[in-house]
Image (spheres, rainbow, N blue to C red):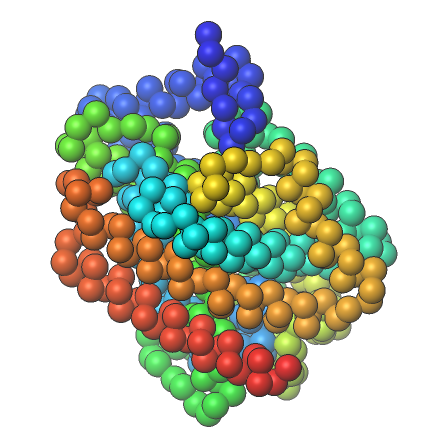
Length: 438
């Protein structure tokens, strides 16, 4: 029996059989032989991995600052950003199903070589910038939770994320389940924080749907929430997670598979959206209502939570941050592997990529650079890298020759194009503002 390969890692024989059972279950669901939740289960997973990008340490900083400074008034922006993310991630999942190719591979197939090389370099830099933010978040969590020196915490984070990535040896399912569990830990942590912080649910309900802009500072925070929500690596990765999972045999099966994966996107992204809302309304209830309106970073949030709500709330906050940083860093490394393989047709061992991508973080920590300034810089890099995958995604998914029965309807292309224009525009504003204040 041939041993399957998952992201260039050999899969064990026993897990290959388990993976084959998952695929068979999905095929039975597509043919109508499984109903209800049993039909959906084989398709759950890809969006859970992609959703981790939406609750990474960068989201913590933005949501906490927004909630502490403006209370509940920017919750509607989180809702808007999450709806945009759902559309983009659904398109990425659909691209993999319809074409059997991931987004970087399609770029390599259809764009000139020099364009692909430029896109590859930009995407690799963006992947490293993403990993930098996520790596720092996990390291800060370890540092604050266990009082480990930050440099040592960085090295521990590298080892832990590498161990998680080695789960790919056992096929796609164990890694999906593990990442899903970590996402569940983050969600459970904020459920507990909701109980402890006692937010005004009336205010939450109002500001979920009532837009508010305020002055220039609040507009810039809105730009930060929306403009930095959709991550380049999540767009690239999602198409790779669905491209070979359950291969359709005809047009009707392709539509059914996409129907299941769309539910996967809705479930995972809704969970990520709820977590982001909880981050903001917790900050509003605890910091803003206590007059602590200048809580703008993770470390300050932790040290402010302790005296206001007690060590339990502060500890839960760090547990969620640690789960976020470790899981998102592992996912970022997966995306980096896919980006290299797709754009240039080769890859490097996971252990080597893990070492290479953690070097910038180790250097920054060793030099004593302010972690929060580094997080801001990483967001600037992401702002530069984001237009390419967004534009390419919309372009490919409206191509009937490529997409067949899953080609975008006209209104979907219009909506996706509008989202792309808004996100790119906000990222330009964020970029200019960040460079201007640097």
